[in-house]
Image (cartoon, rainbow, N blue to C red; front, side, top):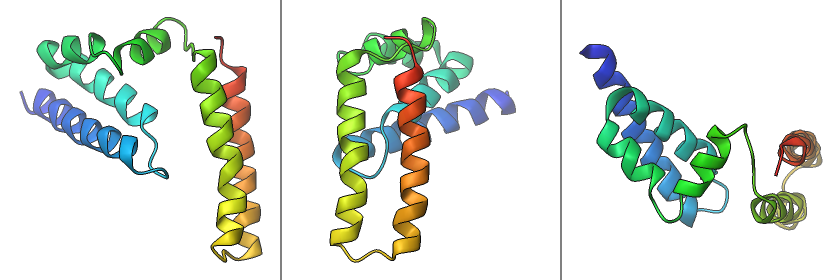
Length: 118
């Protein structure tokens, strides 16, 4: 019962962060929604089914569960947003070392996203 409650709590927390990520540009939505779906699969069939049938999140979750797929539109949006971050950081006065570290991480994330099947 304690483990099921822990999974449920993780699911609620992840879902809340994922929903915040829809509105906050630097907070990712997708990983938190996927984590919420996994946590609800272990704790709340009702919330898991709700997420799977959600008009915005359902397809994303089903694609990921079906072989780690990311649809083409999501890849394009992700790469555009990833590409916009270093110039934005520069414009906001971030130190060069931070932009360099950011570039490294963003390149790795882009490679991962683009390597997933569509």
